Length: 132
Image 1 (cartoon, rainbow, N blue to C red):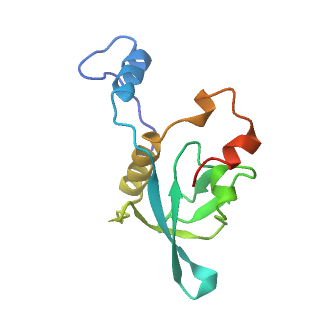
Image 2 (image 1 turned 120 degrees about the horizontal axis):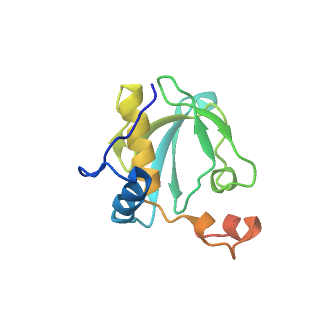
Image 3 (image 1 turned 45 degrees about the vertical axis):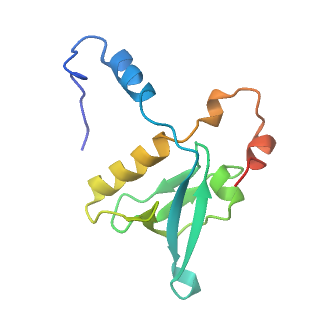
């Protein structure tokens, strides 16, 4: 499903600027915790803490949310996230069963992390060394 935003907070003009202004007012968090089930390890669960974005994870567009790919040299790659892991919880909250709600939850939580791409002075090697 594709979304078309026609207004933000009742403002119909310059929707992109309105979206950017509204998103800048969101609270920024220091980190989020993803809880994954590792299907190849006897359904073992593992928590990873993400403290910046982009995180480098692409999820499948099906239920349950599985890691489809992990970008090499990304924050998630450095934490050992691999293809096939199933996302169970974000910050202790269970992932909603409906795909659209699950994707909305993950996107919202990640969007509140600090954006290291906005810091042009950081090299990929430095990003990998950020506190975990």
